[in-house]
Image (tube, rainbow, N blue to C red):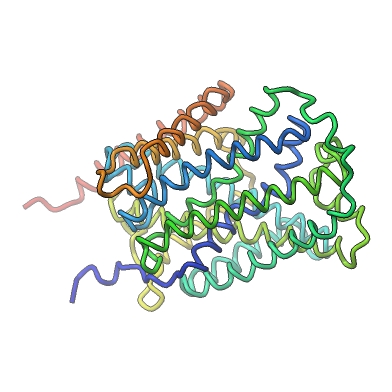
Length: 424
C-alpha cells in the first residue's frame, strides 16, 4: 500500500459540481451589492465596464483553465507558481489568497446574517452568521460529494431568483433610466471596470479544488468557461433590468439595489424571493470560501509552506479535516470580532497579484501544454497591471506589508521544521 494513499483527495466533483462551485463563488455580494456601487461611479455606462471586466476575467479564467488541465492539484496558482516559476512566487500567491479569502469569508458570513435577520427577525445577525459557518463546516466535513450537492442546490435557487427578477422586471424597464449614459466620463467607466472585475474572480475556486475534480484535463477547462460565460450573462441581465427599473441614482444610494427593484414590481412574492436569493447567494459564497481556503491550507501544508498537520485527511471522507476546522475557526473569529480594516483594504492588491502570477505561469507553459494562444495570458496580465496602476497608494502599501509578513512567516516556519528534522 502506498504510504501516502491516505493523503489523496477523492475525485468526486463532476462538471455540474465544478460549475456550481465557480458560480457559487461569483454570484454573491457582487451581483447584489457591487453593481449598485459601480452604477454610482459610472452611471448606466457601468454596463460597458461590466463587459470589459468580463473580458479581462475571461482571459484570466482561460489561463487558469490551461494551467489546471496540466496540473490538476489542490492549490491553484500556488501550485502553478511553485512548478513553473519559483517557490516564492507560489507561496506569495497562496498566502495572498488565504489572507484575502479569510477576510472575505467573514464579510460574507455577516452579510448572510444581516439578510436573514431582516427576512425573519430571528436571533441576531452575528448569531445567524456563526450558525451558517457551523452548518457549512459540517457539510464540508461530510465530504466533497455532499458539499458539492449542497452547493448545487444553493446556487440553483439563487440563479432562479435572479431570473425571476429579470423576467418580472423586463416589462417595467424605462429607456429614460439609461440617459445620460456616461455622466462621469471615461474615468468613471475605468473605475467601475476595476470594481466589477473583482466580482468575477470566483471562477478560480474550480482550479483550487482541481484535485477533487473527475477527468480534470477536460472537465476543468469546460467548467471554468461555462462558469465565466454564465456569470457575465447573468450579471448583464440583472444589471440592465435594475438600471431600467429604478435608475442608476437609486442603485447608487442603496445597499441592496435588487430589493429596491423587487419593491417596485407586482409579481407574486417577488420581495420575499429576492430576499431569500440574497441569503442563498451569501451562503453559496461562504461555502465556496471554506472549500477553497481549506484546500489551499492543504496544498501549502503538503509543501511545508504552512503547518504540515494541515495535510492530514479524514479516514473515510478523505477531506482535509484540520484545514477545514481551522478555516472555520478563523472565519468565525473574524466574524465575531471584526476583520482588520487594512486587510480588507488590500483585497484589490492581493487579487491582482494572484492573477498576475497565474498569467505569468501560463506564459511559462511549454507549447505542447497550451490549450489557448499566448495572447490570452498576455491580455490577462496587461489587464491586471492596468488595474494595479489605478489602485490607491495605501492599498498597495497594505498589500506589500501583508506579503512581507507572509514571507517572514515562511522563512521562520522552514527554519523551525528544518531544525526539527532528524539529520542522517
